Length: 313
Image 1 (spheres, rainbow, N blue to C red):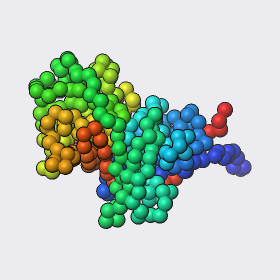
Image 2: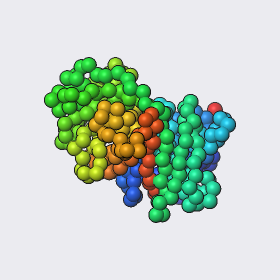
Image 3: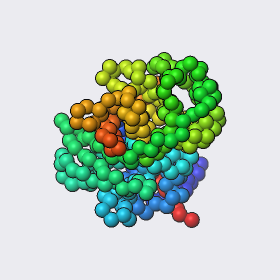
Image 4: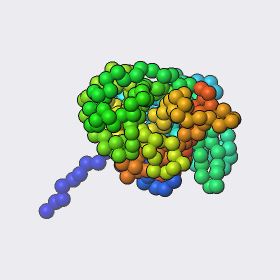
């Protein structure tokens, strides 16, 4: 009996790495798929790759057309939405760039610039006891709309209105991406939240918010400032274990509202715990000095591979 013949067809491929960001051990923090050389990819291909990986964000490293910018980074959600702002999508890219030697000799501290959307922002890479730590500048904070219908917002999050902190606003703040920051009474309320995707999406659109950052000062570690969860149903992100683009706005708001008081140097440090409800604990550090917002963290490459691409029609 003759075995059936199977036709095989080869396709061009591009290399990718899988980075756990805001993490100190593998399989924690925020997972990021990073396509390391994306100069030749079209927008259609990048969206297809992001859909295939199905991570909250997939980032593509490119040369920048802007003079003086070290790299251009583009990030897409599984639904094909391009996202901006410097969070784990960007920090993971710089961790890989530093560890791979693409930025010069390994172990060398230096400052670079990243081109994201219309912004070109500084990135600082340093080495601390064998770890690579990346600190990224975000845009100066813009304080936006405040939610008027607090009962409706609570219901959209699967909470009661009395779960919200009564004397603090649920407000959109933007340091590169505008997210709705919602303060609640305690960690139990944060963990109990079960958003209704359609209602939360409507609430976010009403105030011009991209995602929702639910947070409390009731932390696990006494040295941390906030315990948080992030939801972005409109972008295809049900929950994200570490969101630097939301931690930056939160730190700016906490300092502006007097919840966190800067030290004598004029600088305040905010530490955000996130991802615990997903079994991927993360720790995000943000420093605020006036309008200067800097998000920092570490991470590690946990996997490498090549993904085949369909031909461009």
